[in-house]
Image 1 (cartoon, protein in one colour):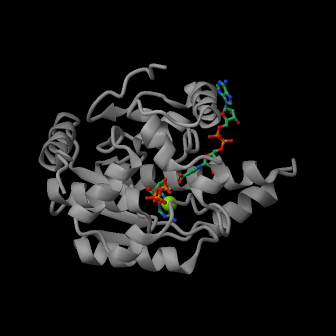
Image 2 (cartoon, rainbow, N blue to C red; image 1 turned 90 degrees about the horizontal axis):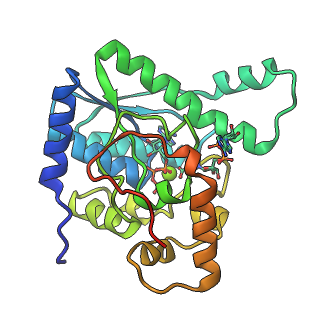
Image 3 (cartoon, protein in one colour; image 1 turned 90 degrees about the vertical axis):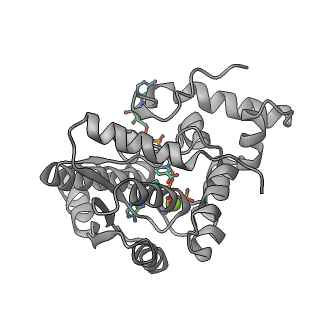
Length: 243
Ligand SMILES: Nc1ncnc2c1ncn2[C@@H]1O[C@H](COP(=O)(O)OP(=O)(O)OC[C@H]2O[C@@H]([n+]3cccc(C(=O)O)c3)[C@H](O)[C@@H]2O)[C@@H](O)[C@H]1O
Ligand SMILES: Nc1ncnc2c1ncn2[C@@H]1O[C@H](COP(=O)(O)OP(=O)(O)OP(=O)(O)O)[C@@H](O)[C@H]1O
Ligand SMILES: [Mg+2]
């Protein structure tokens, strides 16, 4: 493997950013997926005693919760489990308007964001974002849900680079083996919902040739989601997309 993933400078970036913010550490949602696993491992290197993981099932797969626990135990990251199913139900019951499936499912990441910011403020920690470059370019995240964070050390990484980093950081194999999923409904996978393969997005971002229809799809999602890319601290500013 000959990739320079700049692990040490990402760790330093987090240390510097937290210090500048006069904060005491970092908190993140642990989903049992690869992005939060990699970010947790970087945060643990940056702050061995001041990283807090929150596993927040909301009618989620038991397996994902188990993977989240396994990750925190392997990394020796302190964590708690906050079940958001009741809060989710309360919102659905309290809103007069019947909500469509998309509206319902986006409540889950927003409840996670609310929970993280509450604990973060109590602890004087900053909230970590976990979006990778492909997700950010496609706008494949919930606005003010998982998109709401203070500092993100992997926003410049393409999906294959996140997988490389996961291997480099010894993330448990069962987490690496799972197809990327937002986990908002049973059987959801990113590639299926998007109708685009991450390998094509990575190729596109590398300036390689991709099927013209796929290219159009990527550009169209990028344009339609411009509003979601609010500023957050980034290791490298990914700048405007050139095409
Ligand atoms: N032009 C515009 N200017 C300003 N604001 C605009 C807008 N168009 C929509 N909006 C606002 O944005 C809202 C729609 O955006 P949003 O609420 O994000 O909702 P939306 O983009 O419809 O859904 C989020 C997508 O991200 C996926 N996701 C979510 C969470 C995690 C992950 C993951 O990978 O783990 C993926 C999820 O599966 C879904 O496909 C609208 O309801 C409206 O309020
Ligand atoms: N059940 C959950 N508990 C806690 N945090 C969650 C949960 N589901 C999602 N999140 C948070 O939302 C982020 C966005 O989800 P996303 O699916 O993009 O990342 P991932 O699950 O870490 O990796 P992958 O893309 O491979 O599934 C996660 O990284 C995590 O911080
Ligand atoms: Mg996931």
